[in-house]
Image (tube, one colour):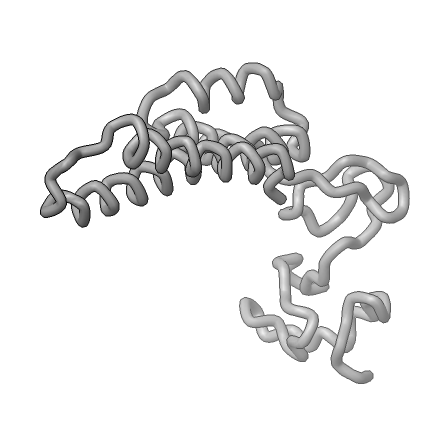
Length: 158
């Protein structure tokens, strides 16, 4: 799910932070070496994680058919990862095609609104969603075997 360019860039960023802490900013007091190691690894991990997060958002925004440029700008520009939090709070649900007519649907629907293809099992009496393994409806107690649901939507035997 994370693109290859993001993984490679995260490794480069981690290495650059290590070079910064151990090559550019060396300290000649040996008693501060553990602190320098800790700070180098922590900041390197934080920056590399942020690059991986930006890579994840760049791929996820395309999967959800949202405006990629706008969301990448928000995630990169807003400080401290606030842009990523905003993205995860406001992102659109995943869409899936109807197997019968290819209409784009959210995962919460039980029937396709274009062709009435049944996507998930529902109770024949109260029309609430049920599990494939249920024999009786948990809401109204209806015997689901009487509904004659398609075989692909039931696990129990008639």
